[in-house]
Length: 477
Image 1 (cartoon, helix red, strand yellow):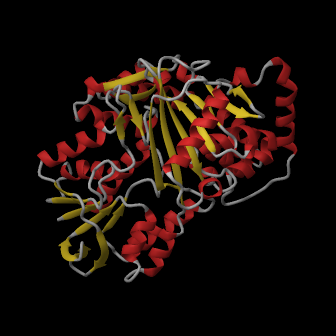
Image 2 (cartoon, helix red, strand yellow; image 1 turned 90 degrees about the vertical axis):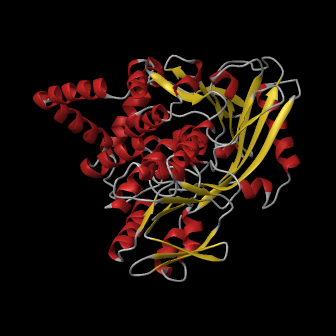
Image 3 (cartoon, one colour; image 1 turned 135 degrees about the vertical axis):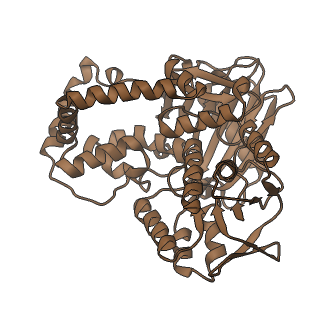
């Protein structure tokens, strides 16, 4: 028997992949709360507008994006899927700094205009002349500041990190974001970004046969893709969502796995895990249960509590993965009150505002009213709100700042306020090394435990679904 801990999107995805693995027999999923879906939660306003407390759109790019779309197709959610292509107004994004909204450049052409050519040349010159710096890991802010200057690090990169994980770019590892990971690796291998990128490009250019072969393989793979991933490639989707809200995905997953024999139990809190030579013992709501293996989709610090007694070293590593708390306020206004159409705007931490950013939900997937989602706090939650703020405080803060920045005169006709405590794990400097130590410990001690969720490989929805697929493979080996 396999027990899955946690009924969020990663736990439910693990249940889906487990029932399709011939090496795994019966599956039980335990969820401590009274609902499934985890941080994905969609609510409806009195007018029928959708308020998303968690993610609302998903990018279709990469292997993980294709796996998620394949899952959507297998769950027969095609008719509920809505998408925006790469020419959609959602490509328009802004940064709020110095009391002004600034357009985020969309392409290299936008960044390096003729007037900024001197700046580009200066960056290249600085990069080539800079002393070699060799590090195992580095924060995104430190890396960008070294290579491109403090202005870019503070005003453009820091707010981007706030939007991705609610975190402080001074602490988040370069390994968290693919682009920065690539640039960092180029610098570490070749002494400078420019040298590394040029060498990498030359290798590809002079491997014509290899390049031609890869192009043929890519074309063949695209042709063999399931319908939705292939459509997303051919139609150049920028992002997608679901009618009725993204919570339709975990709900469909739950229905699917239950109909195929998975036993889902809510309000069942696992309090302790003990690994014996031939079984695993779980203390659940004070009662003892047994199984053969465990897949944990719990936040790392919650799993740490279950392992503290038997595996204190592993528990300490898990506890060391920090999290942040988000305040999320959804606002609905009558009609169209926005001064422009866009995905939304982000706020650099140096502006000393409690807002991390505002998403223009009704611009992404239009409706009859204006719907905004205000994200607040993150790494600075306690600084601005303390440890236990009232929902009224969060609502007032969100309304006042949003109306001021966007120059909205009207009052919202509906709202929703949520405090998402410890909702986003922070992949700080040294995170990859810590995760490796965690997996090495589990392997060395032959513990029948696999890990999935946002604490380990990535915080995006695509990342956690991929991690669930990998966890099932690992525990079934």
